[in-house]
Length: 259
Image (tube, rainbow, N blue to C red; front, side):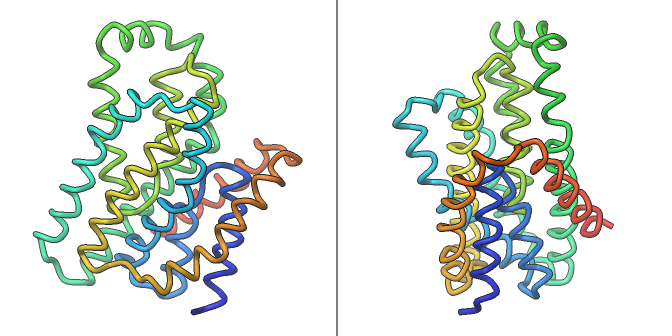
């Protein structure tokens, strides 16, 4: 067991507790830079993310913040998409170098998208009510279900190949499609869907043989207390400043991986 992984879990877990996002966005790049093969980094991080977020979902469920019908809509698109993406990756049976090139490119794009959602998500949410009234009416006039499912498909593909985006991209989709929904419900739905998606994709990678359990244990030893620490610190630190710092970091990482 490597203490560096446990310390990374502690730091990243604290960031997740502070901001609600950033687990996959930071952990997967760290693991790759530290020498873990990309496919193993993605698979291990997906299981790591599903475990760290499950307790938060349970709390939100007991508080009745989770709108399960919307979670189901997202999952109807994302879970089949994740399974198919992993099966296609297995079926193609490309050489390791090409597989790693595909994963790092998708990772870079996902990181850049996540960073943009963090940096400009607040403006998107403020503008939603005023600018998306017509879209809102259409969504609740029959368009909501198919549009949400399609959004789930896109998220499912990105997350299964990169482990990034379940939180930041999912939250942005929910803010855009359901602008009048309370913030606590957005967070709860996003977390619940992220757990379902990362668990499904993680199991796929487990069957693919790309999960390192020793590495996973090292990460969890740091991240579980880190999330608790971050949650407490979050009540004393401005969220918008943290999100800008994290967004800028993810943008730089995304550019480095994609190009």
